[in-house]
Length: 556
Image (cartoon, rainbow, N blue to C red):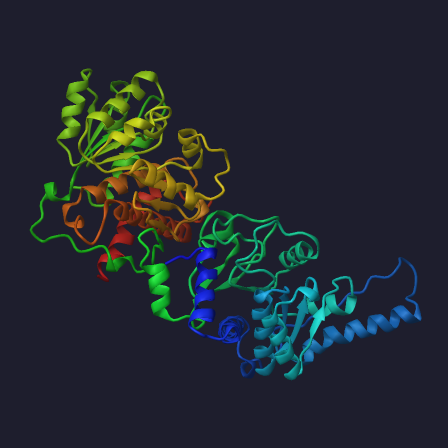
């Protein structure tokens, strides 16, 4: 379950003020989790019996001139810092701490690592006068352990040289409270960190990532691992923020589970992160099932120049388990599409609207839109079907575009409807400006207003239902950003919506759509691993779906 920054602040407040849990105790637990991830990256002290390699040193002087006596002394001092790394294999760690409580987490983590035997330095970035009481308390503990919270001067050669020998950095500049772009010394430190190859462990959020939206506020730390406290934040999985988070680890810092359950898990408008154990959700197919039980899907798709989209959508539906797929395409492309289809059943669209409507009504789910084009006659057909069909409809691509200026048709539908826009299609439909800065809030508001399911595609695809409940997908990768991937997804959603054994009290149409998004992303991740993000194709997604489904159903 994901929690917004406001929800997390309220949880902390209740735990401290109403439950009497000392804030320093929560901070200590957070620091333990951060320190453990640093240890996981650099290895235990006792196992580091020798240097991984030899660290070299180069000092530039004025061309053609011998260094002065002062310069020579500085060279020798800097050289000794570097050479000590070759003789002392103990890992070196630097914690970059802001004046707030996130900085307090970093200070405490530095102390724990120092006590464990690592070579640790903690640096304060920002105004010391603005340090919170808890951060000051952790500084006193650091001093008692033999450490120091130092001011940071990256222009100082001794400091920068020591930092260049570090094995890991801790980012504790900002947590969930950041709402404005980074500036000044904070921005300078983030840019400096990102220019290094040293792994970074971020406290709660990579500094510069907006916790609710994933927006990058000026710049943001590129973390190797983010240790997020109590609940993960949406920004760790959405848009650019997902690319800065690295591996996300959730840490229990001592907030009572029943409090988290009451304030976060029980919320009817909560946000779920689709888990990695989807095999516990997708059941085995009934042994006595027949093709009618697994859904008859009517697909209205394709146009001249777009003959691949309907085929990819149909194949996505079939690979996801649909029993029968009828593929209605314009007559002018029928012969091309028919050659590409073996299992799906293509048909040239009849001239009479009533015949098209009758064919669609004979199915369990209609998928409308992939590659359909935007001719006025076609858009009129889409709107008529939406008004007249009383079966669930998956609306994709040009099916969504046909609704622009006619959103009232969606509002009148009584049967389930899912729209699967990318942000450009969503902006055209709603009139909202690009970029859509808060996709989670935008998707939730649209689904509630129009009583539908919305799958707002992008990094961390958001699935929202009319109740306000949302799902954020943690699978998928940039290799899927190719024409045709969305067609496969729309077919997969239609397939799950049509399978009768999946419909029941434990799953909604919206949740089934979220499942399809997860399986689609998982197939994409497997393709990227096998073929690479550059080379993978939407057709590879289709062929990888069986591998994902087999892996999951075998574990159920």
